[in-house]
Amino acid sequence: MQRGFTLIELMVVIVIIAILAAIAMSTYGNYITRSKVQAAKTDLNALALNLENELQRNLVYGTHSFKSADEISNAYAGWRPSQKNNFTYTLNSDATTYTLTATGTSGSLATCVLTFDQTATGGVAGCGSVTTW
Image (cartoon, rainbow, N blue to C red; front, side, top):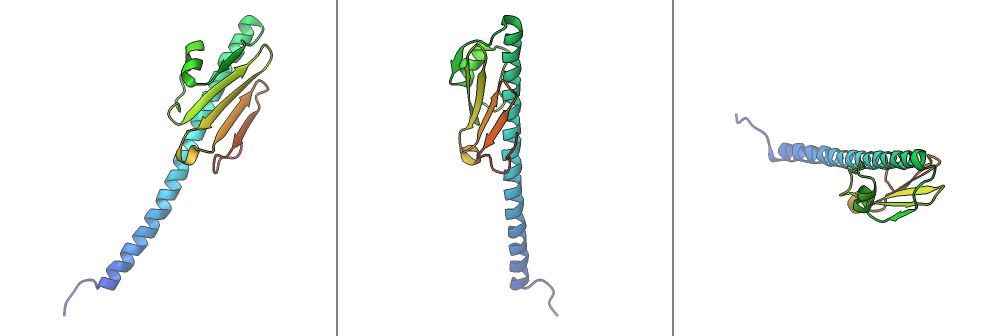
């Protein structure tokens, strides 16, 4: 009597492992996307704190129209976005209002747009399973 596995049994095991791996990869990808979106939200909140600090010191927001994280970091030296490689940051402000935007740059974040303004209202669009601020 020979002992061992038949080819069919091995193929069934391989198919089961492949299905589990596909589910795990999809779930892991969603987890990574959500974590990057959350980090970008934190970046916008930190930038908003810099603007609020500016308001407290000067009684107005500065008039700005920055189109990159580097421009913003030059104006607000304490702000360093953790998601600079995954999002493009913009800042538009006048004396009484500001709008902060983080736009995804590629992959699963390509359609993701996060916004935040002086009323502490955040918006989320196209960010997969993340639908609220």
